[in-house]
Amino acid sequence: MLNAALAAAGFAVDAALEQGVASGVFYVAVVGLTAWLPGTRSTLGFGLGASALAALGYFVSPPGGELWKAVVNRLFALFAIWVTVALVWHHKRLNARRDRAEVSAARSEEQFRQTVEANPTGMLLVDRHGHITLVNLEAERLFGYPNGELLGQPVEMLLLGLDRQAHVRHRAAFQLGHPPRPMGAGREITGVDKQGRALSLEIGLARIETTDGEFVLATLTDLGVRKRLRQAREAQLLAGRLLEAEEAQRKRMAREIHDALGQGLTALKLDIGWLARHLPEAQTSMHSRILAMEDLASRTIEDVRRLSAELRPAILDDHGLRAAIRWLVRDVEKRSGLSCALALPTEELAWNDDLCIAAYRVLQESLTNVVRHALAYNVTVALWPRQQGGAMLEVRDDGQGFSPEQAGRPGALGLLGMRERAMLHGGKVTIDGVPGVGTTVTLWMPCGPEEPLDGGVQAPEHADAGARAEKETG
Image (spheres, helix red, strand yellow):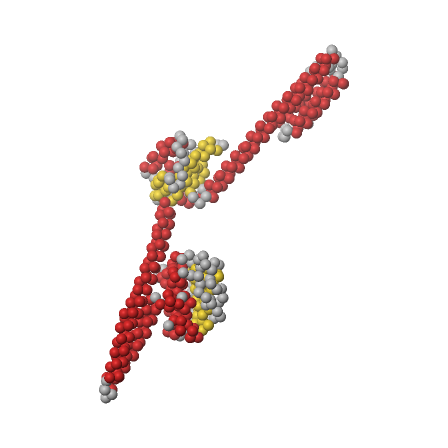
């Protein structure tokens, strides 16, 4: 409104005075005031309007002086108007560019701040004076200072002993131009948390340029966590090797028991039978004693076979996992009185020997727990192929139930062993129990690069109906 009023006043003065007056001066002021208006359109619009008024003023002003002076006066006015338009236009373009740069810088700083705050690694932003200006949640958790308590504090308060004294010199030297120190090649320092506990840290440094000046971004890694992770990996590797050694020892002992002790007992039984056949019939007491010895030898041979099979069933190596599962379930049913049902795939799974052994041991431990603790009458064992890229073994009983809290108690070494075996092969054991209803133990393990040979599953069969399995087990 002010510009329009000044333009109208300028035109009125121009119309009242003689043409010799440099009337363009009024319009230059009008165009110059548009520098405070938003956008460049207002400057262009007032420039065009002022040019039109200056041209129109030539015809409405009273004549005065020579004609060429009046024309030059008008041309000078137009020149002054458009020089002002160009200057204001350029000024506005520079301001707009600066505003965009500031908005972009502010957006970048905000994104940087959000990235730092959300980073799972501890991060601190420190200014040239050594004061903390930004700290993420992981760094607050690491040092035990919640709710922004570290903001504005000297970074040296997080260091212990000699590291605190030397850090001021190190920080000054780094700011003078030392190259960035990436993680993995950083320096180990000793930090201290809010409670005074020492922290073994690795620190990486990088200089950051912002609109507020130069800062140093410190990235912190708790070497204690890394050490514990390394120890956990080493413990897992050791557990795998111990299980391998245990299986090798079981296999060796089973073979020696079967071959040496079993063959010796068989020979002893044959000798006892020879004695029974060659004793005089009158020696009835001796016959009774020899028959008792022969029966004891037969039962001992059966026990040896059972112990050998429990240590490492030869059927697992000779006939595969399905036959071993049939034998184990039938043996448990015969010795415990449980009613057992089976659901097995029509072909072997694409599990290697280690996976088959792990699955067999999990099944063995699960059935042992059912017999000892479940007070069940029925148990179902199922092996399901094509389950989320792997295969699943399920043991379900109708006993007294088993809660997940019981599975996690310190004394549950058998359950811990099952989970450890599955984890070593990329699998998982889950236990679902409902008190008074029963328990389901589920083992899932990957099948590896090959798919199961056949996805079909046989209908559940009773373990005593395994005459065919009897032939397979030998």
